[in-house]
Length: 488
Image (cartoon, rainbow, N blue to C red; front, side, top):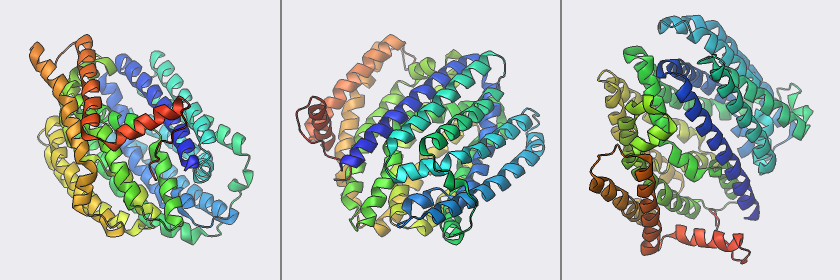
C-alpha cells in the first residue's frame, strides 16, 4: 500500500498543479477573448474530441491491464497507435474546410489543421507515460505532465495577448505535445519502443476494438451539445455551455485530483492478485461523495461570485447553467470509479455495452432539448446523468457483487454531510437578501460557513473521511499513525 500512497501523493500534486495552471489560463483568456472567439475553439475541440476517440481503437490502457507485458507487446502496441493516429490526423486535416463550411465559419479550418498536428505529436509521450503509470512511477509522470501544463499555459496566454485569438489554444497544444514528448523520451531513454513491429497487434486491436467504440460513443455524446448549440444557436452559446460544464467539473478535479490516474493501475493490481474490489469500491464511493456532494451544492449557491472570479463579468450568462448542472452532477458520484473497475476485471465488452445504451439515449434527449435553447440543454442533464448513473452501476454490479442497499449504506452519511454543509451558506445568502448575486467578500464568508458545516457534518455522522483526515494529519506531523488507503 505504500506504493499506492506514494503514487497518489505524486499524482495528486501533479493534477493540482495542472488544475491551477488551467485556472490561470481560463481566467486570463476569458478576459482577453470574447465568448464568440472562444466558441471557435469549443467547436473545434468538440470535433477533435470525436476524432481523438478513434485513437482509442489502439488504446494505451491495453499496456496497463496486460498481465504479462513484453517488449514485443509494447512495440506492437505503439505501431498500431501510429497507424490509427496517422489515419485520423490525415482525415482531420483534409476534412477541415468541409467542417468549417458546415458551420459557415472559415476560422475553424486552420484551427483544426493545427490541432491535427498536435494530436499526432502526442504520440511521442503516450506509450512512455502509460508504461510509467503501469510501474507506478508517478514521479516521472508528474515531471512530464507538469512541464506540459506550464508550456500550455505560457503559450496560450502569451499568444492571446499577442492577438492570436482562438488559435492560441491550438498552438498551445502543439507546444505542450512537443515539451511532454521530448521530456518523456529524455527521462525514459527507452528508444526501443519506437521500433515498428506488428507482434501482438491482434490482442491490441481486440482490446482496442471495444475500448475504441466505447470512446467514440462517449466523445460523440460529449460533443453533441457544443456542435448543436454552435449550429442551432451561436458560437457564444457553445462557449457559455462549455464554461458552465468546466466550472461544474471543478469539484471532481479538485477533490479527486491525481487519484484518477492511480485508480486504474491500483485496481488492476488488486485484480491480478485475485482480490475482490467490492470493499475498495464502496469505500471510495463514501470518500468521494463526502467531498463531491457538499462541493457541488455550495457551488450551486455561490455560482455567481465563482463565475465572476474565474471568468469575468462578460460571462454572467454562465451562472444559471452552473446552478442547473451542479445539481444534476450530484448523480455522477460513481463515474470516475466505474471505468477503472470494469477495465481491471477485463470487462471491456460490458464497457462497450454500457456505452451502447447510455450514449444514444443521452444524445436523443440533449438533441431534443437543444431546439429549446441553452438552458433546456442544461436541464436535460437532470434526466441524462441519473440515467447514466443507474446503467453504469447496474453493469458494475454484474462483476462486483454489491447490493443497492450496500451502495446506499456507503454514501448516506455523505448525504447528511452535504445537507449540513450547504445549510449555513444558503441561510446566509437568504439572510443578506441580495439573491445569489453576492460580492466576493460575502461569498468568502459563506464559504467559511460551508467549511465549518462540512467539518461538523463529518463529526456528527462519524464519517470515514474524518478518520482519513486525522490519520493524514498525524502522519504529516510525524506521529507515526497510518492513514487508511483507498484500497485497504
